[in-house]
Image (cartoon, rainbow, N blue to C red; front, side, top):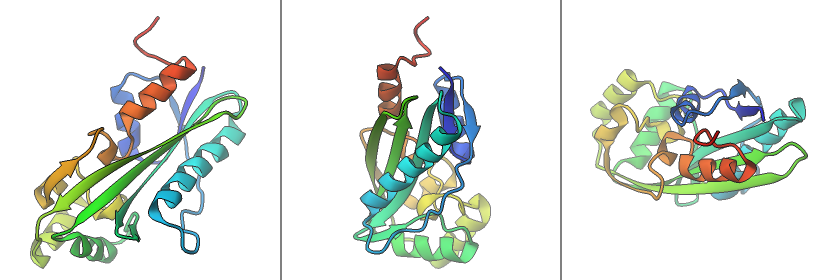
Length: 192
């Protein structure tokens, strides 16, 4: 079966490649703006599903993976900052706080059957000085990362603690849940 990752994220591509899956990528190009009063869990679930469904329409014979991630501080949603200014604002908000990073996947099989999962990761940030936030953003350029932090890079310097059942989820793709879903479909790089 053809496997397609519906994502432009180089981080998700690298994550999926580490598990020896053979896959292609396609970019869904959907509107990622939250709907009015949409809570973070619903937003991340909807975006992963929409991304997977858009790609599944283009490739109806493939198994398609859609994914999304947001950071939630209370009911506030922090997505990709996209600008240096917004990254600094997001990290200032996260300074000394705990946030829940929600990593969602949606897998669409040929024929339309859907498998979904959202993996929460609780991240506690240490108190951050403005100059170290600015220095971090300048060095790591986390403009395409939820919450303005790249945990697989210099972002670890900003964190006090991470709590998760799946350490890969914080990077953006919860690989434990994804590999379980793919095995149920019959995609397993460990079997002949």
